[in-house]
Length: 287
Ligand SMILES: Nc1nc(=O)c2c([nH]1)NC[C@@H]1CN(c3ccc(C(=O)N[C@@H](CCC(=O)O)C(=O)O)cc3)C=[N+]21
Ligand SMILES: [Mg+2]
Image (cartoon, rainbow, N blue to C red; front, side, top):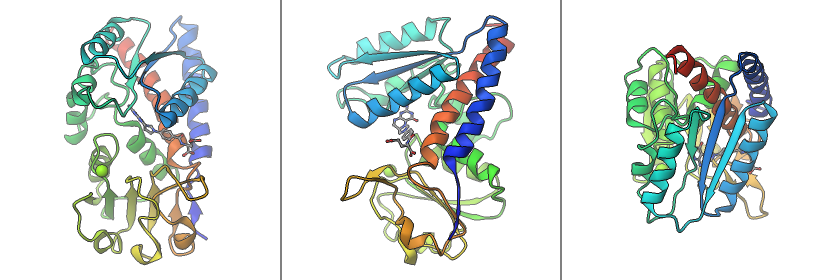
């Protein structure tokens, strides 16, 4: 059986550090504030947002949820973001993806102040990541959380063959940038890749973020590979599972993230970590 990359445990350790940082800030009269904007009533999104809210409160931060109907106009949503950009009690803003089709998602995400962009979605923050600049800037929470998890388990990346499946702005692209910056050789696969297994069979590290049930089985992975599963799919029995056929690969690979209890909790813990980062960075700039 492979080593389980325990995201639940690693996240709770990270959350403990975050809680202490918040305690210190509060002793100076500063309370980190996270605003989460949720548009419409998508079931999964509502559950994620509730979980984030509960954790934020537990760690002692100020958590604000802005729930708006799916019928909101783009102009109204832009006005809400402007309001949050100017709100001095809010240090971090997250607009829950996906947004309704009548709203231009990029226009909304790019309207978030780059100094409050806790997801690292704005062009200036993406650019800093891509250029591997040193200094303080937020990075997309799921890929950053994955890097924290790989580090925790001493997974060596320099010179390794990594395959990222999925090219989204939220996971695949920032994940690939982080891995390249860490010295891995990275292939980004996506819906137009004709033969995924051609790449994954040779990979030392596979990050799958597709939402396709059982995308990868035993024949698609190399013995001793490390598997990170970002998928959140429901199987035929209604259980939450990833993209990878866990039971089929677990005795072949060296390490694998479980779903649930792998990447998901790391994403939320990283969101909390970066809310405190943004708060502290704002202080350093005298804001
Ligand atoms: N602006 C934005 N930033 C995001 O980071 C973002 C987003 N929009 N939209 C949706 C996706 C998805 N996402 C998840 C976070 C935690 C779990 C998570 O905690 N999963 C648990 C299971 C939770 C359950 O019970 O369903 C686990 O895997 O153990 C899952 C998915 C963040 N996202
Ligand atoms: Mg994709």
